[in-house]
Length: 108
Image 1 (cartoon, rainbow, N blue to C red):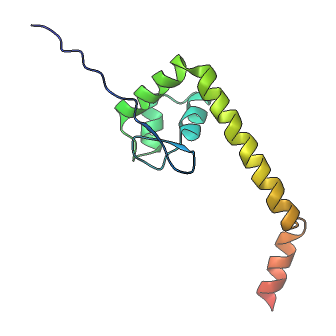
Image 2: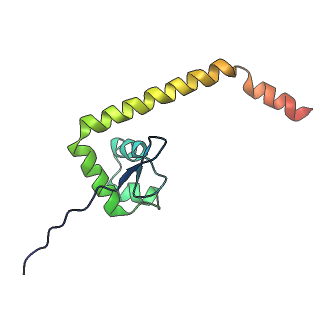
């Protein structure tokens, strides 16, 4: 008996927002890689995010390991963008005393 070896695409899709998500779910590549870096196994990641299929987790972890530099570059870009957005928001909305202001509104 021979083994049929077929090509299967990596279950990653980049949306219009530029965010890579895994297996048609809302789970981001960032999330999966962070869990992997924290020492989670593929089984633990799939258990933590029930919308993910175990095979997809293995596939994406393999993709990450083969293209570590490229993925790390993508992740750095995402972190930089998040920092920019945070700075923009903080410049428009002073974060100091937010809790006190919200509690004061609640008391009114």
